[in-house]
Amino acid sequence: MQDKDQEQFTKQLLYYLGGFVGGIPFFVLRDYARETLSLRWRSWMTRYYMDRYLKDQTFYKIQSQSIIDNPDQRIVDDLSSFTGTALSFSLALFNAAIDLISFSNILYGIYPPLFVVLLVYSIGGTAISVFLGRGLVTLNFLQEKKEADFRYGLVRVRENAESIAFYGGEESEMQLLLQRFKSAFENLTQLLISSRNLEFFTNGYRYGIQILPAAVVAPMYFSGKIEFGVINQSVSAFNHILGDFSLIVYQFQAISAFSAVINRLGEFDDILDRSNSKSLSDSLEDIDIIYKDFISSSSLESNGSIPEEKHETLLEVENLILKTPSDSTLITGLSLAIKAKDNLLITGPSGSGKTSLLRVMAGLWKFGTGKIIYYVKGGEDAEKSISSDVNTTPEISENRGKSISRKSGIFFLPQKPYMVLGTLRQQLLYPTWGDDVVPTSDSNKQKNVLPFLSNSDDMNSELVKPKTDELKKILEDVRLGYILARFGLDSTHEWSSVLSLGEQQRLAFARLLLSKPQLALLDESTSALDEANEAYLYEKIEAAGITYISVGHRSTLSEFHDRILRISTNDSDNEQTNWHVEPTRRESSIKV
Image (cartoon, rainbow, N blue to C red):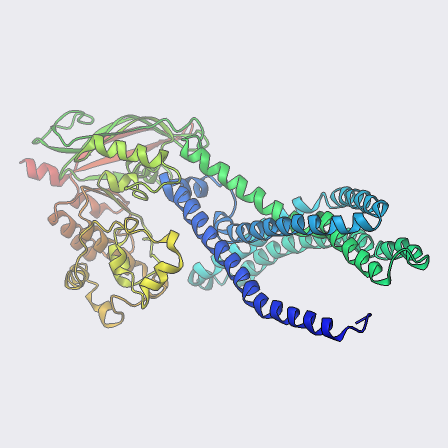
C-alpha cells in the first residue's frame, strides 16, 4: 500500500485469504486435539490413582486414621486441573520457544542493544515477581483444602438429611457450614490481597516498557537510516520477545495455583506409595494374616470347650492382643477356632472391642499382635494373589479390587448396611456385580469415550450372575417382596433414604444369601428388626449352610448360636483383659 502497488496488494490479499481458509480447520483441530489429549490423560491418571486408592484397603486406612484431607477432591478436581493446566503450560512453553527464535533474529538485526535491554529487563521482572508472589502457592494450597472442606460439609448434610431433620439441627448445621465457609472466605481474601499486590507490579512491568522500542528506534528513522515500517516491526518483535521472556511474570498467579495442585497430588501420591509399600500405618500393625487350605481339624479349641465332631476349620485366632491406633489394649491373649456350622456370639459392654474384633477377623484391622489364619480353597494361591495385588502398580492385576474378606470367603454385615449408588439389582449383587447389571442406553459409545476406564476384568465378569427370577425370589425370602411393587429391579433411587433401616438390613441379608460365603460376620445386623424377623433371617442363613459370628446385645441371639464369647472390662485401667467362651443352651441341647 505504501508503494501503491495494486497488483502486489491483490496478490498478498489472496495469500491472506488462502491462509485464513486453511488456518481455521488447523486451529479448530489443534484445540480439539489438545482437549482430547487432556481428557485421555485425565482418564488414565484417574484410573491409576483410583486403583491405588482402592487397593489394599488404602481408602479405609486414610479415612479411619485421618491421614489426609479430601482424597475425593484430589482425584476429581486436582487431577482435572493438573492435566489441563500441565498441557496448556507445556504448549505455551513450546510456542514461546518457537516465537522467541522467530523474533529474536529480527529485533537483534534492527538494534542489538535493544535486545540486550529486553533480556535484562525480563530477567529482573521475573525475579521480582517470584519474590512478591512467593506466598501465593501456600494460599492456593490452603484454598483448595478449605473449599473442599466446605463442599464436604454440604455433602454430609445431604447424606444425613433425615437425621438432621429429626434432631432439628438446622441451626447447628448452618453454624458449622458458615464456619467452614468463613475459613475459605478469609483465606481467599488474603489470596486476593496478595494477587492485587502482584498485579500492581505486573501491570507496571507490562505497560511501562511498551514505548521503549519506538523511542529507541525513532532517532534512526528521523536520520533516514531505516524506513517507517521498521518501527512497527521492531515494536511487534519487541512485544513478542517480551511476552516470551516474561511468561512467568504474566502467568505467575496461574503457576502458583498449579503449584498448589502439584503439592496436593504429590502429598496424595506419597500416601498411596506408602500404602503399597506396607508402611502407611505405624508399627502397631503386627497381626499376621495367614492363608491355608481347608482342613478337618479339632485343634486350638478355646477355653476347654469340648469338640463335638470334626468339621472344616474356617478361621483360627492365635494369641491375639488387640489394640487401638492410640496403643490402648482392647483384648489380650485371645485364641479360638471357628469351624463350619460353629456359630459364635460375641457379647460385652459397649466399647469393649467387639466390633474391632470383627474387623480383625475380616482382615480390616491389624493393630496389635497375634495371628489370624483363614482356611480357604487354594489358600497358598490366595495369599500369593493378595501379595501380587499389593505390589502391582500401576498395572491392573487379575484380582484387583478384591478385598481380603472376599478372598477368604468372609462376608461382613454392619449395623447400618452400605447402600451403593445404583439400581435395586446392584444393591442385591453388591459387591460382585458385572457389566451386565449396569444399565446404559449407549454402553458401547460410553466405553469408546473413556478407553482407559473400560476393562472387562474390573467388575468380576467371571462370576455367574443370578437371573431376575432368582433376585425376586431372594427378596421374597427376606420378606422384601413387596418393594417390587414400588420399585423395579433396574430403578435407581437414593436407597438409604427410601428404605427404612430395617428394610436395609433385610436387603443386606439378601446379599449374604446370594453371596453364600464360608463365614459371615454380623455386627448387630438385626438391631432394627423385630424378634420374629430376626429369628427368621438367622434360620435362613443357617439353612443356607453359612457359618456366622455375631455381635449383639439381645438375649434372644443366644438361641441362634452354639457358643458365646463374653468380653468383660477391667475397670482399673479400662483395658480388656478378661474374656471367656461358653456353650449356649442350644449347643448343650444338641449334645444331649
